[in-house]
Image 1: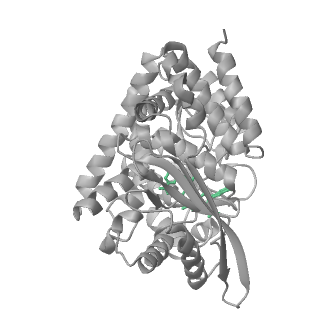
Image 2: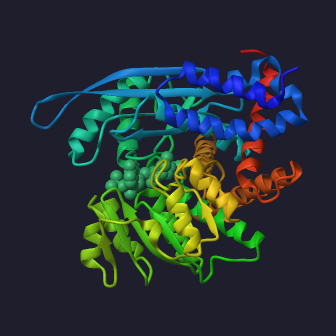
Image 3: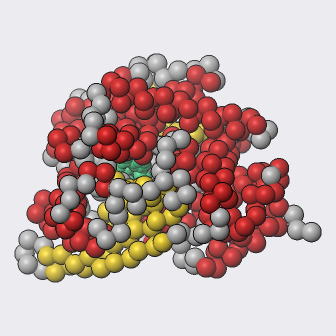
Length: 448
Ligand code: NDP
C-alpha cells in the first residue's frame, strides 16, 4: 500500500526525468503537488484515471522558427513557443512573453500556473502560454513589427476565439498586440476580435485591461490586509519592476492611500520615500521606453541604486511585480526584519521556495501569483465576453467586475485553506481551489 507522499514523489520523479533541464517548470509543479498531497489525503479519487499525470503534461506544445530582417538588412532567427496546457474549462488562455530568457521550460511553468489561475477566476478559460526569445529592447518599431508579423504567420494556424486566445506578458504590450492582430487579420481574412486580448480600444479592446493585473493585485492585497485588521491606507509599499503590472499596482496602491517607497527595472532600483509620480513613470516607461534612471533625473527626492536590492527598503507590504525568482530567501529575511507583514505576487513565481518558506515561518501573509495576479487574465476574459456580444463596457463597470473577481478569488483561497485546516495559508488554498475545478472537469470529460 503506497502512501500519498510516496505516490506524489513517484509522479514528481518521473516528471523530472521526462522534462530534464526545465527547473522553473519543476519548481511550479513541486509547489502545486505539495498542496495536492493534502487533497489526495482526503479525496483519493483525484488520483484516478491518471489525473495528476495528465494535468502535468501539456495537451500540445508548438515550437517554431521565427526569421525576421532588421533595419540594416541582417537576418535573425528566433524561436517561437506556444504551450497549450489544459482546455478542460475553456479555450487555452494566457500571454505571450518576448524576452531573451524565454525557453520551453519557462513557457511550461507559466502555462502550468495559468491553468490554476484561470480556474480561480471562475471564468470559462483553460490554460496556455507562449512567447519567444526575441528581445524587443533597443529594437525599432519597424523591427518589432516585422518580428511580430513573422511570429504570427506561424502562430495563426494554432489559435482562434474558440481554441486559444493569447494576450501580453513581459515584452508584449499594446504595440506588439497591435502588430500581432494585424498579421492575424491579414492571414485569416477575418476581423476576429476574440482571437487576442489586450487590443486597442477602437478595435475590440476592453477598458481596464491595461490596468487590470496591477489593480487586481492591489485589490486582493487590500482584501488580505482587511482579513487581518489592516489596510493599505497609510501603508508603505515596495513594488519591484516598472512594467505594465508594476505601474498600475503603484497607481492603485497610492490611490488607496499607500506610499510606494521604491520600484525597479533590470538595471537597478529607485528609492522614492515621498511616493511615486505615476504620470512621470508612465511617460518614461510607456511612451519614451527609457530606463528608470530617466525617472530619477526628472524627479525630486528619488535616488537610483545599482547595488544592493530593492528588498532592502523598509515597508509594510511588498509586491514583487517583475519576474520569476526575483526574491530569494535572504531577501525575504531582510523584508521580515524591516517590517514587511504582507506580500502579494504581481509577477508569476517571483518568490523562490526558500522565500515562501521564510514568509510562512515568520507569519507574513502571502498571496501567490496565481491568485494575486489573476486580474489580468480575468479582464481578458471580460474582453472576450465583450467581443462575443459586440459590446463595450464602461471603465467603472469593468473595474467593478474586476474588484468583485479579486474579492472572490481571495475568499475562495482563504475559505479553501480553512476547509483543509490550513487557515491563512493562501498558497495551499489557491492551489487546491484552482485544482479541484479543473480536476472535476477533467474527470467528467474522460481520459483524453
Ligand atoms: P513588462 O515587460 O511590462 O515589465 C517587466 C518588468 O520587469 C520591467 O520593469 C523589467 O525591467 C522587469 N524585469 C523583467 N525581467 C527582469 C529580470 N530578469 N530581472 C529584473 N527585472 C526584470 O511585463 P509585465 O509587467 O507585463 O509582467 C511582469 C510580471 O507579471 C511577469 O512575471 C508576468 O508574467 C506577470 N504577469 C503579467 C500579466 C499582464 O497582464 N501583463 C498578467 C499576470 C502576470 P526591464 O525593462 O529592465 O527589462
